[in-house]
Length: 404
Image (cartoon, rainbow, N blue to C red; front, top):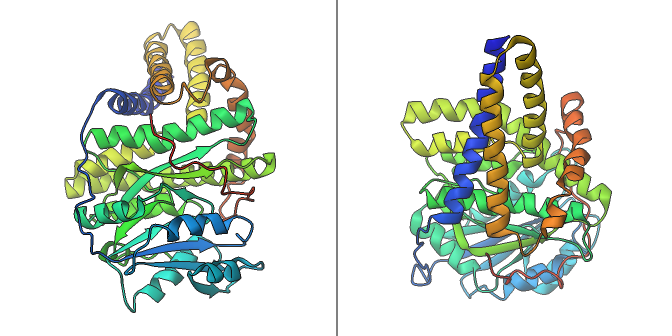
């Protein structure tokens, strides 16, 4: 029993330590990133936008993209199994539209693969993938593509979410948790000179990199899977910290739950499949970047990490009181301190202007809201790709808002 308690304590200490290191590096290390404005001004760019029934909000998204493209660039919209006016709207705005109809192979990965096959006849220098409900910072698409071509690596923009009007505490805390995952932690890795994960939108690839992998799948977190497959193949992704892509959290409770279920069930499935493989490949290939990604991957969603720590600490404390085993509670107590430190550091340096402390202290309710989601993973994990229902996107999204 002592050995089991000690093992549990050590297993939970690792992700909390990783999280603390990342938030510290993001907050206090200052590594410069070269300005890419002088790089490869003559490269050709194809912006690929997979879209499934996006007629309600796709127009402002495409307008923001088209305003940044030059004569040698192109915008490709893959209208995937659409039953609305998505294709007609995109075509009227000047995009090249590819219509795909296949009810047996559904999901973003299949739509991207369809678009890449069309581009292969006259491939561009770089491909930028944008979701149909996200805005990109004005003037930054060529910069993002140029950085990918210059480094020869997949490049991920900062991907943030804005909250609905008059947001609830749950929405504010959800946006904070996403900021930690999509901005603070990748920035920490970048400051340490380590690779990042991909987030599904605001991603730029040199053509030879993206064409080397098979995107045709219905995986529910195809972006995370893609970044790990590319990293193992020798193309780890880099963060472009000065380019911002912005989405908006759904207002409807059902849509928010559906979105979080897909993200977090997918993350947990990827941990199970890829964490051991990444660790093995890091040893086999002698690459520290793969080891860093394996450690990054095993950090579960923030609310789940808090839940696991609470349950584990109570368990080993009870055992410690009965059997006088004090080392496991001491280790987990230290891990809890690291967890509090990491959350507080991320909040103070990156989110205190968006999330008042009084709202942050209501996070207990947010964590409790997530319990059914994790219980569902144990009983019936989501495996099929499901599109999140959209609110009206566009005019109220501000991708020019400066980063902290």
